[in-house]
Image (cartoon, rainbow, N blue to C red; front, top):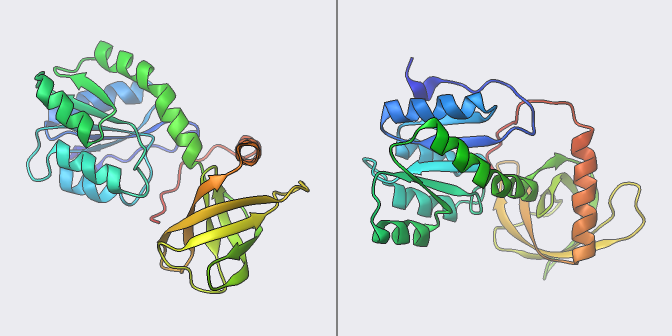
Length: 251
């Protein structure tokens, strides 16, 4: 079986979800085996063009990217990751046999977060994961999306309507609006979390619109106290969710 055809097994929602992009199959297989042994959900890909499509279609907690690959090389892949809506803040680990200072500087300038020197072995990979896990979990917290039907007042420069959320995260929400919202629209939102009295008001930006015309909205300005309230609320929702496999949704 080709390694790209291996499918991750359904595991806890709290397990890290990592993309590994490496055209050398023995290295890809080694990294996948080690990470799976650490109870990581692994998506191994040997084709960088396929990886480029994946990073705009689904969210990962971390991405390992080889630098020297045919087609789209690692530098270009990192740039595409940083331009994507899903993974613009996802930690990226550069994996390479090169040790030139200029190579590292170019990779970090492109948006790399960490550096892993080849040849890769179990010890190096385990140590690297221990170093990066905190950053990956922090990144996950920002992008956790929980399903929630919630009324929200939406004000644009030309409209003021009552919309309904489809889901919510610490840094945004997916909204079904009675009037079309367009990418780039600046919004003022007002809503109340379930079982809470205080109104939360934020400014936001429409980042994407899906096939059902639901708008993916990112908060651009939110009171720190309200940000904390949203975080605590999502923590409570997640703690009551049964363990399940993460669902990929292109947005």
